[in-house]
Structure formats: C-alpha cells, structure tokens
Amino acid sequence: MAIDWGTIKSLLIFFGPLFLPKAISYYRSIRAASQTHRLKIIPLSPSLTRAIAILSAVATTFLLRALPIFSPENIFGITQSRLQIPTEVLFNRLSSLRELHTLTPLDLALKAKFTSLESRLLYLQFGPDVLGNCPFCNSDDPTSYLYYAIPSILTPHVFNLVVITLVTSSLFSGEKAAGWRTPAAIASVVVAVLDLYLTSSFNHQSNSNKLRLQDLALFFWSSRLMRFISLAMLDIFLALAIYLTGTNRAFVTPPSPAERIESVLKGLGNIKGKLNAAGVVKNTVTRDEGLRGRSNGYWAHEVRLTREMMEEEEVVRGMNDALENRLDVRSLERDAEEYTRGVLGGLMGLNSPTVASGGEAVPGTPTTTTSSTTAGGHVKEE
Picture 1 (cartoon, rainbow, N blue to C red):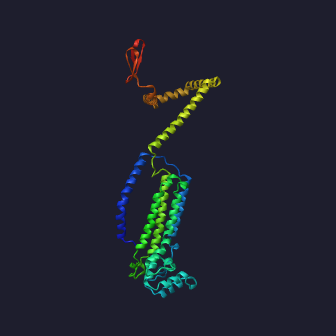
Picture 2: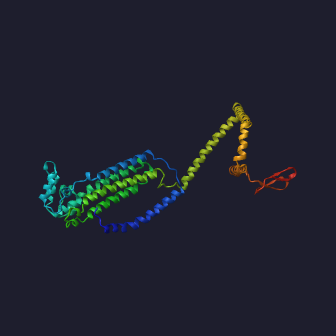
C-alpha cells in the first residue's frame, strides 16, 4: 500500500502515547495476576472450540480472497501498458486477450471513462467496479467516487464484525469468550475507520507524472490486499486469545476474595457432610449387634493375619536387612514424630508440658524434654 513514512510517523506519534502505557500496565497486571493465582490448565469447552473453528474458517476465507486470482483485474497490468497510452490502443490490446476478442460491458464502460487522465487516476484509486458502474459519479468531483465505494469497502468489515459479535456472545461461547467482545469490536471498528481514512486521503494525482507501469501506485489493489489480510489477522488473534483464555493459559482473571472464601466454605461443607455420613455409619455399626460382631471379627482376623505374616522367616529376614542396610531408623522416627505433631499438635497439645510440684502439669509451657510423673510426685526424665 502506498503509505508514506510521514503518515506512519504521524499515526505512531498520535496513538503511541495513548495506547502504549495502557498496554504495558495491562500486560503487567495480567502477568502479576497469573503468577499469584496459577490456575490449572483445562481443555477447551465445545462452545469455545466451535467459536475458534468459525474464526479460523472466516480468516481462511479472507486470506483466499486476498490472493491475486480472486482480485479484480488491472487493465494496465494485464496489457503491460503505461498510464498515458491512447484509449483505442489500450482496449485493442485488452480485446486481443479476451475470448472471442470481445469486450465485456464493464470494459466498454471503462473505455468511455478513460478519455481523460483524471478518470484513469481515479481507476487506480477506486478500482474498475466503482469507476465503471457508478451512475452519478463524475471525474470533476472525485468525492462522488468515494461515496459510491464506501459500501464495498465496509462490507467485509461489517461481515467480520457480525462474526465477532456472534462468536463472543455469552449465549454462543460462554463467559470466557464474552470478555473479548468489546476489545475485538473496537479493533474491528478501528480497522474499518483506518481503511476509509487511507482511501479518502490517498492523493490520486501522485500517479499523473509516472511514465512507467512499475512506478504506478496501484492503491486499489494494495488496499484490497491489506484489508483482507488485516481482517484475517484480527480473527486469528481473537481465536488465539479465546484459546489462551479458555484453557487458563493467559488472560485469566483470578477469583475475588469473596469468591475464594465461598469456594472454601463450600468445600468445607462437603467435607462436613461426608464426616457426618461416616459418623452415622459408624454409630449404626456400633449399635447393631450383628454388624458390631462382624466388624470385631474382621479386625480380629486382620490382626491374626498380620501377626502370622510378621512371624514368617522370610519377612523377618527382609525387615532386618532393610533396617540394617537401607533405612535410617532415627530419620524415620523423626519424620514420624514431626508428622504426628503436625496432625494432632493443635488438638491434643503434643508439646510436652512442664510438670509442676505434686505431679500436675502447667499447660501452655512447652519444653524440650519428655517428662513423666511417678508416684509421690517425682519427675522422671527420659
């Protein structure tokens, strides 16, 4: 596309200070939130998969439309003619390339318009369809061609906006895709406005002094190519954002403190319900004579089997070998003690209390030695 460096710098200077700080702060907040609240990666839901498939299909269609085979032909390009070529010579060359050497109705309409250099310059800006089919346009008023070209320029943008609105609907794709609806719609509108701005601001007179075909700025074909590529890239980025959000890989808003508390309370409620159910089962077994007898018989049988197994010669030999050569008994005892303190310390006060006179312990005073009280109130340390 024929866009000079000055226009690019103007756009960067205008939009850079507005969007760059916001983009940096948004990235930092998302990164900090993802590091603080790491969520489990989940597979895509069927609704999000369907949305990504639709966006991929539309993006592929736009990329195919951008291929030269689907682009309107450029008369000067296919005939290898310069812009100032006489009209009769130009269309005689074109007729020789047509089947049966006959011109199409659009060719005849363009032939009637190509009598002036201004019409040829507008042809390079707006394309063959606008120049040949506009019923009210006049080369003396180039703006009239812009008015006629606006619907054809906006049609792919409107179509893409409808697709974006559909796939980011909460009813169609769920809440995760709906979060991208506003940014995607804004980006689509910005692309459409930028497309119209570049078309309206293009100086078609810049081609008037170009003598060679290679020097011509073919704005219509370049803008058409960039239009479809930009729409395809927009859909691809949206599909990627939906995928990252739907799988909890990025752009995930962590739950609020109230939501986390509610989730914890709900989990505690489920655990309490299971403990109550286990208590009911235990009480039922204890009170029923038949069930109590079966339970006592089961545990008696388990104790007998364990004792018999531990008395076997091979088992004893294996345990002795493990204790002597492989296991650190002291480390094992220390780990068991720490585990017991961690599980039951808050409930039973496993830290040994200091023993007062008369054999009574003073609660709340921890000690590093294990004490036991003998008859008469004497303390025996182990």
